[in-house]
Image (cartoon, rainbow, N blue to C red; front, side, top):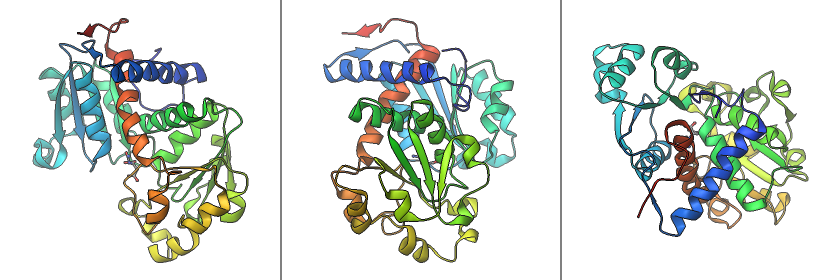
Length: 309
Ligand code: NCD
């Protein structure tokens, strides 16, 4: 890996992404055979989470521990952040206490880039505002790559709150680098300018967006980022854009449905679609662990697998 930190995938080539995917596949295979690893032994991976999280946090903790690292998780609400300490002072404190890598989630776009300039250890962005969520994109790319063999020539349609979604931005980058065509679709108020420059095609009509797509990628409405102000109501969003059984049938029997979670059942996705075998939500979560393990190994570990018996 060229870079020490992972703030976004902007500078990542197809080969960089494939290195992580190949490595994750190898680690997944070895784990399934019962192999255990120690390539992160002696390392301390510290998570600093300034926003709610379920799967990203547990996934990073599980990945670090599978590699043999110790982990600490600092939540803003229960840390000295609540006493007024600045972000840079907090992360410097975490490094002084022994962190060999920092995993940061923050509501401000640019926070991980700022931190990476002020600490001497790798910083991994676990989601910053509406900017980027690179490890989500890597695990989503892995899920499709593992299932379909390649993303070359695939059409992926991302539906929902594109304006406030860090997942959309990172996934457009990852999917297009791997050879997929990416469409984005949603209410016009939630489609910001500049999407074409990122490599996406914009659709304002759901039926048109679904025609011929191989993958539907659903997003939650980011209420905490004020996107509710861009919509008359969630009920209307659900009626016009919610992905239900009827729309799944329109997309076809082979279409795969992804969602980064947390899903708001009954808003962007119906319970029936979420339960359908075409929905890979749980597989995405499972794959997140090995993808993050691969990434931590590449950023922190030695070259060998240094397996524990
Ligand atoms: C996403 C996030 O936090 O950006 N969740 C996740 O990490 N799996 C998506 C979301 O919150 O809607």
